[in-house]
Amino acid sequence: MSVGTSGMNASRIALGVMRMDALERGDAANVLDTVLGRGVNFFDTADIYGFGAGRAHASSRKFGMAMKDTGVVRSDIFIQTKFGIVIDYADGGASRYDSSIQHLGESLDRELDALGTDYVDSVLLHRPDPLIDADEFADAIDGFIASGTVRHVGVSNMDPRQIEYLQASLKVHIQVDQLQFGLMHTPIIDAGMHVNMSDADAVNREGDILPYARLRNITVQAWSPFQSGTRYGAFVGNPHFPELNRELDRQARKHGTTANAVAAAWVLYHPAMIQLVLGSMNPGRLSQMIDGDAVQLERQDWWDLYKAAGHRIP
Image 1 (cartoon, rainbow, N blue to C red):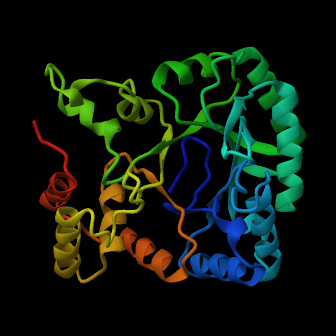
Image 2 (cartoon, rainbow, N blue to C red; image 1 turned 60 degrees about the horizontal axis):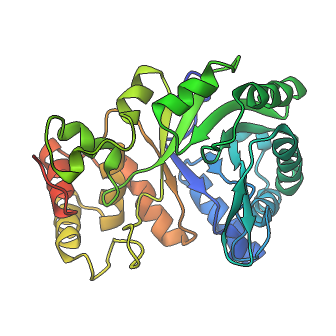
């Protein structure tokens, strides 16, 4: 698929390497080899990924090692990183957001070193910084692109007005908005169905980001598509979500596949051509999820899953 207007023809499914720092080197190479063998050539990381190791850039460094161990040719894959959050690893939370040109430059340099590459195909501002100066951010991006260390730019977790504010200063097009979206996290579509209603789902917290992104040729990337948004974690096969899993299993039988594939297919069914970012480090589970790209859901299948996940059609 083409990402935004960038001309990057990347796989519809991307591997997010956030948890890769927890793997042994050989296991990391096995994960990479597994997804490459299934046609995945797009990889998503961030400077802060290293929560298992307790330090920044740890997952990117492990991914860089895996690239060497598998002999992957750098020009054959697309690497995307994110920056702009400073983490206090002692408590696991953010100490600040930082979109200053100094922080972004230092962070990018350390990421490139960790990854073992001299450029990334795209870089995303990880979270909306209330102290951001759009002109300073644009100067940083201009410098990265001029130096050849960054090819394209995007954002993560931003609404249309925040994107418009940055785009007004940028010389290049914002190609990506990475947003959480999956069967149990659907606010980017819920409010649109509850227009002119007074229920809780009518509250528009995302500013119609999905239709906006489609109008502006911005690719939406779905992060944590298998998370329930509860303390129970992932929903597939989880006994805390019996109705959804009954429907996932029913459709898995119908389509001759697995529940993981059906859950992935639900996101991929959307006509916005959403890119799916997988976070699992289990090769078997990853293979099942990647199978979702070949599952041909019917329209009623999509709605039945939506309802089984606890969402209401007004």
